[in-house]
Image 1: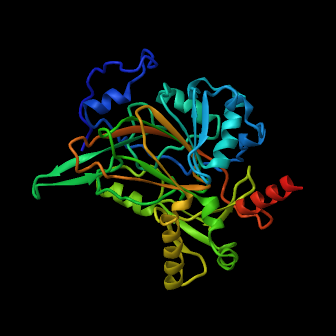
Image 2 (image 1 turned 45 degrees about the horizontal axis):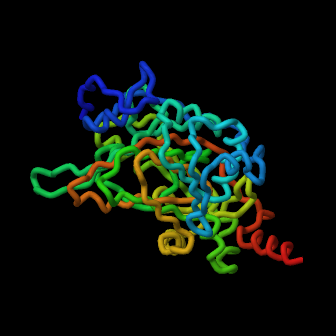
Image 3 (image 1 turned 90 degrees about the vertical axis):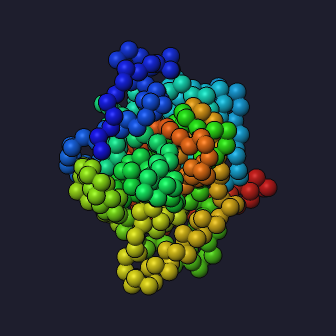
Amino acid sequence: MSPPEQKETTVLDNNVKEGEIDIKQLALEGYYFEFPEKKYPKLPVFEHKDVGHLADPKKASLFDNATKVFDLTPNIGTEIHGIQLNQLTDQQKNDLGLLIAERGVVFFRDQKINPYEGKELGSYYGPLHIHNVGGHPPGLEEVLPIYYETFIAASQQISTPRNSLTKEPLMVGWHSDVSYELQPPGFTFLKIDILPGESGGDTIWSSGYAAYDRLSPELQKRIEGLEAVHSGKEQAAGAAAFGHTVRREDVEHIHPLVRTHPVTKLKALYVQPGFTRRIVGLNKHESDSLLQLLYDHIAGGYDFHVRFKWTEDTVAVWDNRVTSHVAIFDYLDSSEQRRHGWRITTQAERPYFDPESKSQKQVREEKRKQASV
């Protein structure tokens, strides 16, 4: 179904300039996505230079200019107040890159940044990813809107949750953004600007560092060096079934189950049910059993999760290389059902495993020993 004819928008955000669209206003007026019939070649291979290598280990440019900085849990999640993402200096961007790599996800409330500025900020960290099937705002193909509400199925007279990519039945589960690409995302910037009432619509992130650490040493040894297939074929098939163009050929690549972060040099568990399909070299029974064990481990790892309650105009920035996340659709049965935002996703290096890399637990223990000397 084609998106409704766009109305003349009223600027809600003083940060939106003449000639730019206000996608929050579009969302308030209804479903606004464009699905162009445009095809793209395969994403080009590139050498990723992570700006976290240029950061100050103390991250003074960020911390000294913030009004408040605090960790939400010991293992994942930091919140920073008093910083506007659309005003960062290059050094602050570098320091932020390191902080995200270390903490997994960082939150900024009351942000004025708009999608045009989001594109500019994201491009500092790597090439911007264009989603293979997702709709986008007019003229903003690198921006993936997040738009959920409840559509009434007339034949059944029940509320059926649908998603904004394809309007197919909502898929709920842990995932790392488009991990099926050859060079999957490094960072995702997500701004939520419409919330479903006073409660509901939280997001949970899981730390890949701590998820690895919580496995027994024997299981850690068993999965190190193993590789798994990550696939976007199902996502593409679902979009095609609803008449949307699949922009690139079906995407499927092989990545390590444990990967090394290029900046922190730490090991992280890198599997999730969203796109991980099978383990190379194992039969189906073995692969399914081991993956299910790891999926259950991630979902049940409450001591390495952070659950975040959004406020309007909050931005979360996370490192897909060392986290997975899941949205909570607990608001779809309430009277206030619309949740909207937009995301920018940057590509990074091809996942790899360095046998010489260390675990987060190992590094922490080494630091404690040094401090006690």
